[in-house]
Length: 342
Image 1: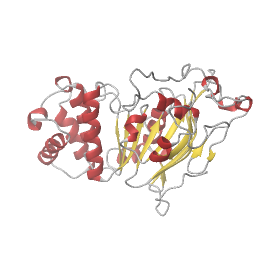
Image 2: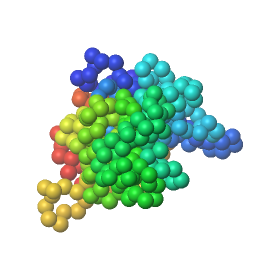
Image 3: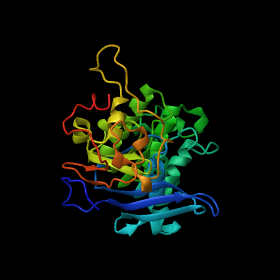
Image 4: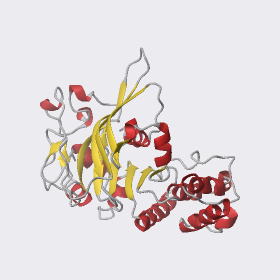
């Protein structure tokens, strides 16, 4: 696999994903490749972003790594190596030991991710008791401390409350507390601010950033918003229709995006330095307007840079100077991202 240049190449990756593929389809039905040939590394303490629109395969990638996809109607290929073991072929017992202790996940919907009939305190403390030798009293005290660290006021009282008694922002903070309860080495955050308003989003992201820094955990941030990864991630993988189309460090990606899809995502972000009344430039079409990667570039039907080669031949993910790129006709290097495709 062609790899992105990195200052961490003297270390072994904490998580090495190689040619991950996930296909859905029951017998007699048409199969759908949700994830196809996805490869990336996460090093100890590194923050990596996985960015793309809904339906690009981001969440399926994380669920495959965590071993949370159903057995029926799903085929998983490739490798996801963590600490020398392939998570994709590990047994249920092995994954149960790893989840929550070594690898943890913050799910995207705080309204449904917590058990509605179990007090918040028990949901936090059960993770501690499951993976560590702690008494009920010790686990409860640590749970209260975790709620305080994530910014929930009066944490001792909140331990007795149920999820429906908390706001959406507080529920998301509880999920972060649960994920970080045992000090995991790798945290996967799957769109952790999707259901929250903008003000609460900023608060939750700040809490997440501080706690990840305190624990020195590696982070995989899954989001459709490049604005989030701009202030949080070291490296960014842009994903479209199940494949990574561009991979670069945060600075290089934002300074000179090369893939037309990356440019489209950047155009969609409001900028403070834009002139008054300037309009955003949306990506034409929708994610459903695609062609199979076996027949060409999946982004071709929506791409302003499309050329004849894009339909009929699939581009490979190859080294392009300081990044990895999957495109036959990328933007010129150094071209202003706010002018590409205008």
